[in-house]
Amino acid sequence: SSSRLVSLSLTECNLTGTIPSEMGLLSDLQDLLLYKNNFRGPIPEELGNLKHLETLEIDHNNLTGDMPLEICILMVDAIGNLQTLVTDCSIDCACCTSCST
Image 1 (cartoon, rainbow, N blue to C red):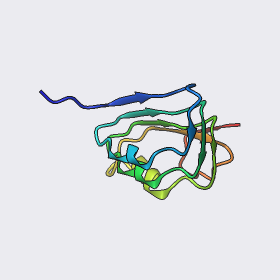
Image 2 (tube, rainbow, N blue to C red):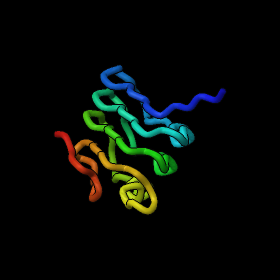
Image 3 (cartoon, helix red, strand yellow):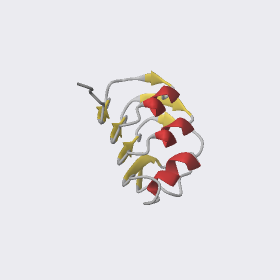
Image 4 (cartoon, helix red, strand yellow):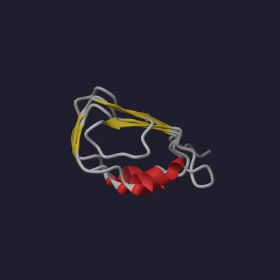
């Protein structure tokens, strides 16, 4: 039997470094919760490959830059299923459902 990862919660784990672009390979992922860590740098555009993603919460980190268009496109019904997108207010994000300071 095959198994598939649909939810990944790594919240408040004191994780550091950048969000690995390889997370974009978790094709069945529906929920990705990475809030309250110490991630830094840009948000990887590869997360836009997660066509089944419904929730992405990456707030309370030290991320920089803009929300990649590849992720915002997942908010469009015909393309993706993304319903909840939360990041820090310091990220330029026209498609986020909310932001945290």
